[in-house]
Length: 267
Ligand code: HPA
Image 1 (tube, helix red, strand yellow):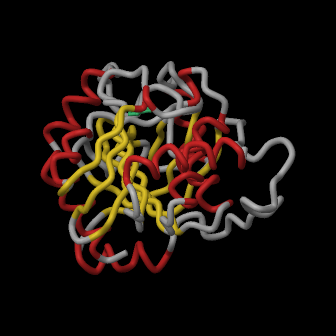
Image 2 (cartoon, protein in one colour):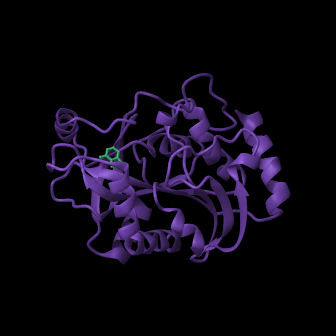
Image 3 (tube, protein in one colour):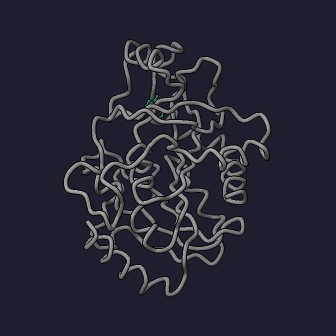
């Protein structure tokens, strides 16, 4: 793994010179519009980067962007990798480790999610306070490289409490919830959602969990912002579709942008 991380770092260094990102920002489905806020960007296509997976999902651009946003030096993934695309969890973890090797000590992960909590509604921005790994996959499976992180990383503070508190102070009445990550790509059945509710989950999605684990493994601070794009299966009568997810993300653009801006400012 370290060899791959180094190879990607070497490649990127040739493009970005001495630019050192402070934070990794991962943009979820339909959030590529955020890239327009990046000043003096270096834009690198995933296709050019050695060992990098490719985005295969509509709504994910497939570009790595370095630059300044809201006063922070960032490495932005416009387009993320999901396990349901067939990638190994280690492929999903690779960009996180690369960000850390380039100097980033924070990871701001965003996603689209279905609401299990009936008090949430489409368009809500939710700060994730903890995660449940229901993907039954872990990027750390296999031999561990202590140069990257410990064999048994502590996950008792998966998301950084201080960072969450600072965002809450600035955004006021923002909602909070537990995110359960599932493999997908089929949406859940109403019976599954009922079961997840009993497990304590407020939100469900098909991403983020592998990145959180990798970021914690290599010692980064994590914040997760979810945008509710739909009520989860059985919570409302409505059928689920990727189009609805993308449309709701578009409609919530301003609110998400504000939340990301604040999260960057208070990091
Ligand atoms: N389930 C899983 N993933 C999702 C959903 C959902 O309802 N909405 C957006 N991503």
